[in-house]
Image (cartoon, rainbow, N blue to C red):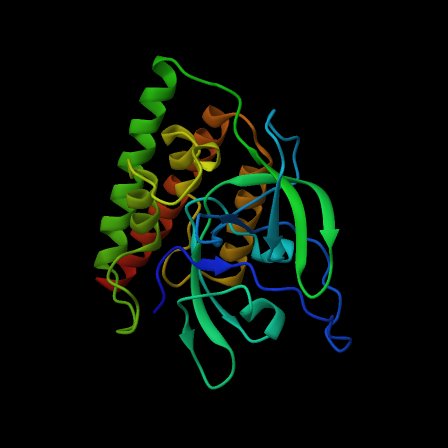
Length: 255
């Protein structure tokens, strides 16, 4: 598999492919240029930008049903040439390539610069309003505790052998608590409370279609919020809901 954070490169301009449909613009992913003109994936949301100069980035669009939130990891199967041209260090297949990406932060797309052969636009990072104090620290501790408990319960479930040993919730928690983010501009790195506030919204083993729809609603709400404490409280609510769901499955499993 590819690395957790996808490396992307800026391709040279080429003639548009008339057979490729023009994608609808659902800003869910961005990429950041590095010294080697490489890009890393990050999640975004259409909200007012902070006061910073916009940057010119390639954009990889997703529909709302596939929104990628900060801290979330997802594996994509890309096969269109215009998107493959953006990527490096991917697992090549007979048709297209597999690439693993992780959301970094939300951004505001200020202006679309081109549609073909791939989307490109001016973006600015979007961060939460400042929210601190004792209450925030206490709620962060409660969220961490709930996420760890949910991970422990999931590990007790009987799941298919091909599922990873590390749960999505644990993976996002570990990433969110990182102290060093190499190859990123600091302005695109949310603070620890904001990173943790997104980490709770992850799928768990054996979710039904209705449960996945509920998760999607929580994720969209989380992307729209600009108050860290409010998102953390919503995350605690969602984690506690999943703990109850997994506990019920374990009880049935042990009968």
